[in-house]
Amino acid sequence: MTNKEIKIAYQECNSLDQLDSQDRKLADAAIAAIATSYAPYSNFNVGAAVQLEDGEIIQGSNQENAAYPSGICAERTALFYAGASRPDKSVVKIAIAAGQNGVLCESPVTPCGACRQVMAQYQLKGGQPIEILLIGTAKIWKFAKVEDLLPFTFDSI
Ligand code: THU
Image (cartoon, rainbow, N blue to C red):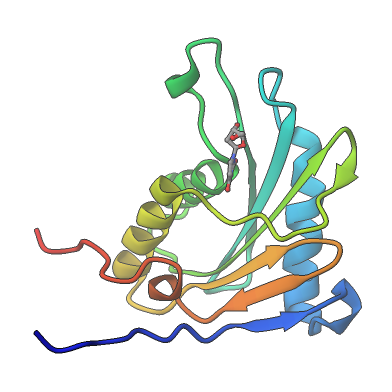
């Protein structure tokens, strides 16, 4: 066996003010979407904002259900709505933010495995990399493509 290694490159900054105007707009849209979260069970409110190739921004938030698996994360709400309402537009960027009791989380919120897989699918569909912005008050992380969050992505069928 040969030893192999994967390196993941990402960018970090520590304030929204350090983002360029396009990223800032998307980050603000993700933060604003937190207000539409329906999370009576976890009280963890997540907002996501998806940017399409023509610049349009589509927002989503987590929507919980008494039957837990029936709920859905903010990222998938936004991506599925983008896919359903703008089927011919590629997704080029997604920003994610979260808060608890009205306070934005300090650490960037990192998407669950199912949301990473869904991001990978929309990246495949759109034929161009989806940039990912993970927003926290202390740190903001930016990834250039979905594989940076989901190496060895399943896309073989
Ligand atoms: N959640 C998201 O919406 N996105 C994430 O990236 C992580 C988790 C939601 C799912 C659930 O409603 C709540 O946060 C707690 O897990």
